[in-house]
Amino acid sequence: SDSLYKAMRSRGRSFIGTALTIRDNEPAEPKIIKQDFNSITPENAQKWESTEPSRGNFTLADSDRYVQYAKNNGLQIHCHNLVWHSQLPAWVTDGKFDNRTLIQVMEEHIKVLAGRYRGQCTRWDVVNEALNEDGTYRESVWYNTIGEAYLPIAFRLAAKYDKHAELFYNDYNLEYNNAKTEGAKRIVKLIKSYGVKINGVGYQAHLASEATPTAPGAAPDQKTLEAALRATADLGVDVVYTEIDLRMNTPATPEKLAVQAAAYERVAKSCLAVKRCIGMTVWGISDKYSWIPGVFAGEGAALIWDENYNKKPAYKGFLKGIVGR
Ligand code: G3I
Image 1 (cartoon, rainbow, N blue to C red):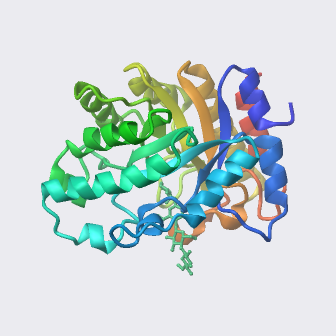
Image 2 (cartoon, rainbow, N blue to C red):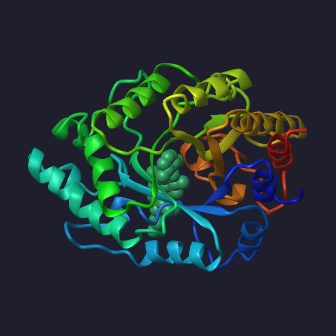
């Protein structure tokens, strides 16, 4: 096969996706999407600061373009996201809302976003990144005001305004099968204990392919990745790799690119080894636009196309892991 998503479909799974920022100056991107992907995740357009910069002022033209793009091209869309502590405007963070008012603010937002795209979002990241590394809840305006109940409340509201979308909890560093993974299990159980729907857990998979200054160890071994996926899948939800990028210390060398290719293969294999792993999304197409170098100095080259839109060894590794032989 010469298509990531076709290979994935032929293994009986649902999708291979990419994060998307629509760029009119990169004609290679729509071609790659057509060939290799059947799902997109809007990289930034649906975040709160972009969609409700002040209370009740909804600015959805950009978000609409992504939903339209998916529709025009017959793609699934993983909508991202409804409730997060980051890219959250100051009017929410510093608004000093009391419990009932903050819940009201949340409902107004979810009503407009989930409602507007009802039946069009394949999946929604309902709550994003609620956990600390030790598995406790992250301090945020949501948690500090509402307590852990903000999670089931958000999922209940998402289901209320879009009964079709699959509803996901999404976080990073869940791939190590450690205390943070336990935290994700706790969240799935919590939401279910309220009698509220949760369909899946997103494992972002922002990992290092080799040891780097910001990640002392490389991406987990395959057994660990599989165990981490099973930890929540065994609770009766789907699992997805939602934001894969496997960074390295730059510049890339043939050796590092080979190590990275093996890491991509291992991540893909771990998904295919777990029945409820329905799909995988990479966090962008080309290294040219990846968020990594801007945040991790001296690291990058994390995606599967290089800065000139040439396939890297990682593309082959990823495909090999999907095909499974
Ligand atoms: O659009 C403005 C531009 O007008 C301005 O000139 C420029 C100056 O800084 O900033 C531009 O906005 C940037 C935006 O990306 C678009 O490029 C923001 O500063 C920058 O913070 C933002 O970064 C995004 C980041 O989320 C913000 O948290 C990345 O693109 C995006 O890839 C990243 O994605 C997140 C997921 O949503 C959640 N999981 C982690 C992942 C990586 O951080």
